[in-house]
Length: 25
Image (cartoon, rainbow, N blue to C red; front, side, top):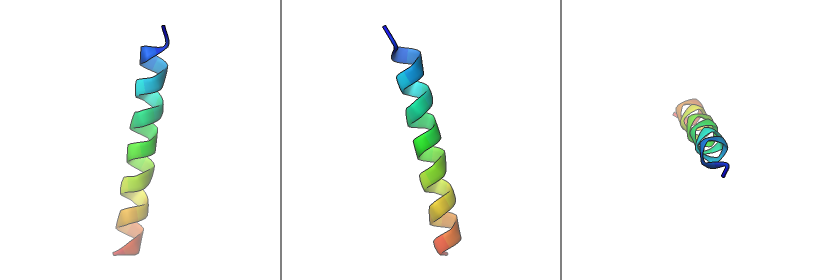
């Protein structure tokens, strides 16, 4: 099972989106 890896990827994606949103403001 690669649950942990998937969670890590999701976390990275969420953080990336957060950064991009901050840049827009």
